[in-house]
Length: 212
Image (cartoon, rainbow, N blue to C red; front, side, top):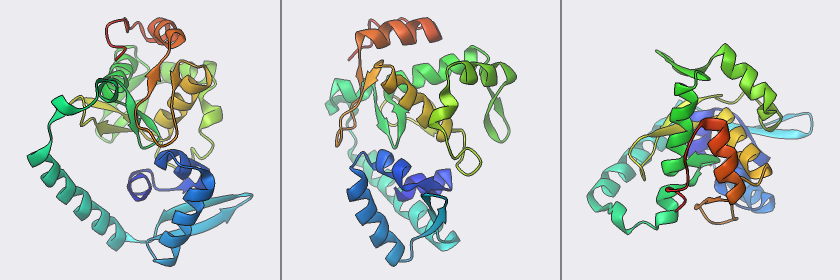
């Protein structure tokens, strides 16, 4: 949850529960402890409680721990021992990672829905129309607060997948359509037969050979 707040700036309690893949009640307990510890702050907006990192010192702390974990992981990582299903498709915070996440991201760039800019990925005019036509926005309520889009290095596949609020909304849409299925407490994401057809038609992907 701290890493999600570090990169996405402001998230609601509901979004943070999704990030951690835990029950809202459990997330609430953790958020209370993090708030009391001074690592995050909470602001009530309407019926929602929005959380953010307290200050730059906490960001530096998170960055330091993350960098240390990456160094340790690079010495011990053996991707060949990862379950095939995890390498194929998995949760990365609250968005889609793994080979499938990279394929979808690449398809959105090649399809002209996204473009690279000096400040990071950006939705094109065609992309805005596509997102609207697929009602992606209904799963992205805090678009004015949360980081909308970023590239996230995929440690299981080696490429990059999409992160940020739009990526989380895409995953939520795929789950709602029963193209993908997730289970609480697990990072593996299951691709359904409907997903092979739906994602294939939507992004021009042949997913029959990468179903994990």
